[in-house]
Length: 177
Image (cartoon, rainbow, N blue to C red; front, side, top):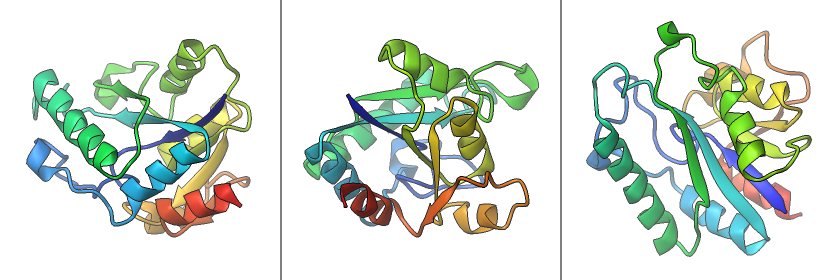
């Protein structure tokens, strides 16, 4: 079974410092939906692992988060692809949970659900927390320069094994080669 794990905001859709709080605010990054469809065509199960502390902060509720994800699923389907599952952490940093990236809890949930080892599994993010969560479980970190990616690339704690691509579409093209 071939898996790819993607962060949501800044990788699939445009990010916002004010959070994505409604389905109308969810806007795909050019080429990202088609990239997911290509990954599916090449036999990959596409999973999303995303921090969504806006729930804990009271910025949106679970029904709204589900509606945002439903919009994302529909948009990917219209592009000919699918997202197999979305794993999310609704907690704020103050709650000290194990699932908020950079902690590896979401990644461990994925490993348990799919009964697999995540060693070497391509994991795409735009922030250090995404990359550190990947490294914690032995996954291969990929940084995209969309979202917060340009800023993240300058970080001194960028994992040495990180491979950088300008977009999710460029990452997908690389994976197919």
